[in-house]
Image (cartoon, rainbow, N blue to C red; front, side, top):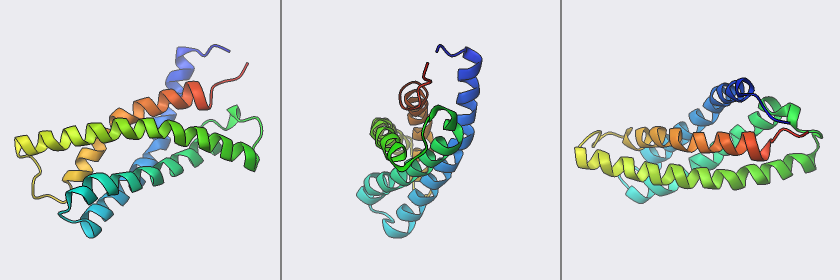
Length: 152
């Protein structure tokens, strides 16, 4: 069944709104790890912390998407369906993570070059937030047209 532009736009707006929970989880966990556990450590702040925070955010967003955003597109809400959808969702978030990670590194190196936000514990989080905008668009397309594709 072909979707109207209005329906896709509505789903995009709902995706952005519901994904804010994952964004809060991602940024909060990233800041906690980068500030308290990996303070001053490049590998910890820009490799480990964003990986852990992104996966926790992906889990949060999947639960919201499965039970609320695209619940009408899931024909059976059992354990098998949940884990099958989660596997596909997690696989596509790997692509979104790669996009986020590359963007985050590029933004960080740009900030270093411009001497912006250096000596700030929020610099990794700011890089992460900007990068999430890039990965979020990819994530929406994968959710809307692949994982929770509207069936005929």
